[in-house]
Image 1 (tube, rainbow, N blue to C red):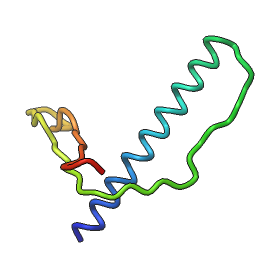
Image 2: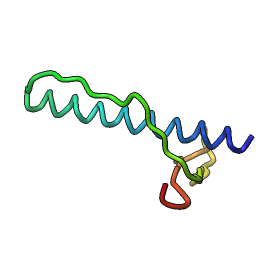
Image 3: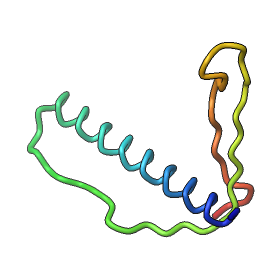
Length: 75
């Protein structure tokens, strides 16, 4: 069960990272009005243990101030 949770968390981190990269590229292309190009990631495999921290907890909904995801050791 823990392995599945770690794999799902890693998958979410990879998706968020790739989406942020694509947004950054699109913003740069819009700013410089350069030629359109496509970029993406087909497969990415990273192995290691991660820690997910919900901090700080607050009194109002959604009760979680931030979600921190980090590797315990270098992958």
